[in-house]
Image (cartoon, rainbow, N blue to C red; front, side, top):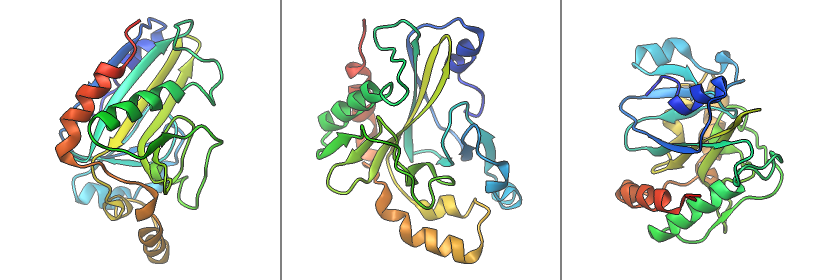
Length: 217
């Protein structure tokens, strides 16, 4: 789970082809964004509770990865592919639209794909699901994020790392971050309405629907 995905390694070598990789989560890990400071993690506490601290190849902030908490899918698009878009602000729109259709087929309604500017909030430099970027899937009525999408782009193509929440328990994530007591208390109060899980019981239906929705040609 903690190693670099084959798709990401291929991107670095320039040997890129369109692909989807489903990552099975078998252990707990705090996954930091590519440029996120390591100091954001409480390394001593993470070690004491057996949570690895690792870094993904794409941007954004921290995600707590653990079994039955999310669906993790990596999507790769080579430069020049019909799905490729040079505009980083629009490149993930098709990804979010595929997730939204898949979630709708699994019974999760009222969703939309965010196509506006990056929405930064107080905790979005620490917690991935606290902010909203273009292409991500949100509940239309409240803006609560359901699917987070991070990108890594090279001249060879783009890697989209996607996480669909099955459950949203921000306090478990906050316990692993290097925050003062007042900060942690404030974040625990402010984060719950910013994201939403779709339920473990929908996991396989969502994944099957997503794979069926992905463009084949």
